[in-house]
Image (cartoon, rainbow, N blue to C red; front, side):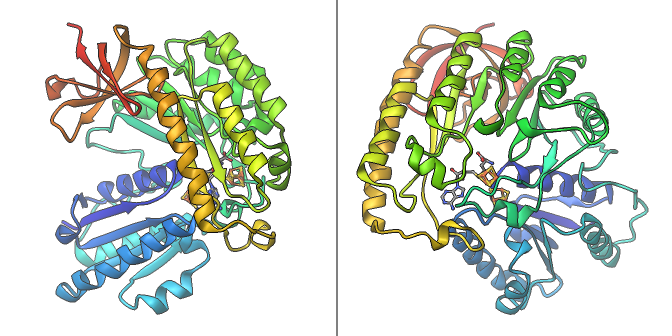
Length: 435
Ligand code: SAH
Ligand code: SF4
Ligand code: F3S
């Protein structure tokens, strides 16, 4: 039996692709292992979003050379976003790599390669016609708590800092019928949380019907079963009140959680980023969320140190953060990326100055997150139990996407529980199980 290990970097799109590859290999009678040195095949799913991410992946691959020396039969396959544009570089820099397949390439090429690798190592009787885009249909092993469902691929927005449209190609929505079929399967197999994925989910448009994102969300919420629905990421440029009204209509199914990437609080910078909205429009959307979903949490992404960001522009970002009081912020220093327009923009700020802005923002957000979390002290939250936490407690997630730790039996994994919140920090909530 061939043993495979998958190392996944990057966003949920990569997580979904890795899940699909794992399902495919399991259906070919292979076994997934969770350390590199047990594996006959190592897959690395790469991310190109920032230079730091990219460098980290190269050093990881470099370290695999040693394993390859010990086991000359070990196969190493690189997939994902860096593989979209650095195929030759991978082959020349790491001569022990077996195969490279970029995120934009035809998935059948990867599929055929995987089948070849499996055939060489075992006589699989089970070469099914499985579509890697959506993962294995026939899957006997137990499902993970969350099912990641790509509703589209690629992106057409060309934000001036972003490499994704180049690594993933143009935006293509999948058919709503295929999506709903996949979700029904996931629910039958035991998934308790359906995560709808796309770089800009709310520009979803079914190629075969007039279903848009709001109506797709409603169709998923109408499916039978006890499960939650989340989606990442909507784009403020395309956010409509319809989506928020659907969320409010299905409070038991659709999580009260909105990750709405802002990027900057300065209209000048938003324009230079080609984001297609201004802060006024963004604040209006946050207002909709607060009005229709008063218990919802809101998180965002912020880039600091974009070319041309003055102290005043940065202050505008700080002001809007103080005004909205996000529950969580993913913040990054601008990283110049190949192919993008921003790489050519004049950038006068030193890296240290950018780092100082990031530190300031993150410190402020720790205080805001803790303050927001204090509202939950003494409250009971319905949570979905995901796994064991490192400290031996169980890790659950609330509808608002809080990490909630509590003591309980591991048999509770995959089920919904009610937890009384006793303690909070900026990053998580700690509570006790209500029997
Ligand atoms: N499609 C999503 C974002 C996907 S990338 C959206 O448009 O909101 C996730 C986040 O990485 C982005 O929101 C942005 O904050 C950050 N990011 C993307 N490119 C970056 C770059 N070149 N430098 C720093 N951060 C970047
Ligand atoms: Fe990148 Fe912008 Fe597309 Fe998001 S919307 S993936 S930031 S180009
Ligand atoms: Fe990274 Fe590709 Fe996602 S660049 S963030 S894995 S789309």
